[in-house]
Image (cartoon, rainbow, N blue to C red; front, side, top):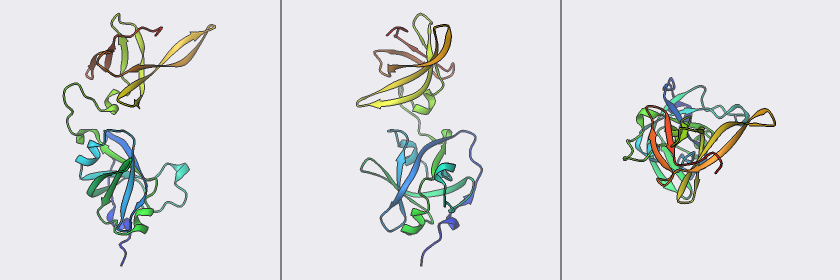
Length: 199
């Protein structure tokens, strides 16, 4: 007998410090497991937490979605690395139909639930929105994204420049490696880099 997935979900307020860490791509196997597409290469928080907060898919992907409404909290039985993503077993999701009903669901965790990072390592979510200045104090931009390029990550900065008398938004990229990054001050929300505006 199949367990209807909605019985596993309890309405729960989303934590104030919630961070979206991935999405459910599809069912995996026949026993209710789901395939997860993480937003970051660092999946340690998803492995470390036994409770996830789920939100329905964004409106443009939500046609026919009826598994639950609003934010729900779920218990995670097991998470495993698989191929280029993760697979997970959510308590109460016991068959493929229940798992398929969760396609597109967004997965959140409170930032406070993330495992501590070693000295000099950071979660991408902690870098977003930080101001970046160089050693001379010149403002280089604000971190809008972090892109993995093989062995290193690259900060994607957004800044405003004036072209032909008009202001416009531009992007600059700085490798997030010790050779160019002098300091990350999360308290001051500032990164200092050995980088020039015309690089």
